[in-house]
Image (cartoon, rainbow, N blue to C red):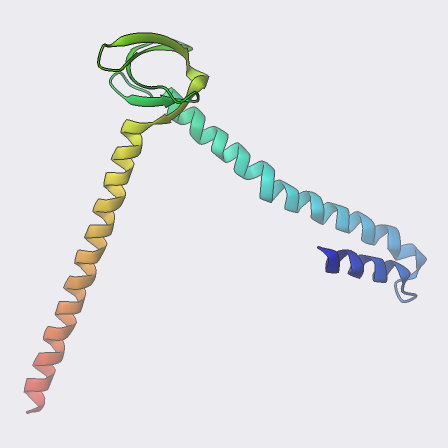
Length: 145
């Protein structure tokens, strides 16, 4: 960042750029900063908010959730903006707002299982490909003899 500011300062002080191009340079630099700020902060934040909203709207009865306050419970009833969850072995029921849900443990566990299954399938495919290559190499070696 410091080197970038030094570059901008030297460009403004140099006689080659002239007095007329200096304001344009600053406008271009400001535009570049705005675009970088958008792609580095605003866009990822909106994407995360969209994913959270989808998670909260796709809740189903029986899902295990964690609230923002750290309460773990199972969804019993779903209404428009609030849920009733059971907590603990004595089945205490609590009414919470949808926005207070931090994670859906049921969906997270399913996603983790899918990722592990995909990894295992990729490993199996790689091993199969490797064994086929070894078989082909062996047959080529026998034909050369």
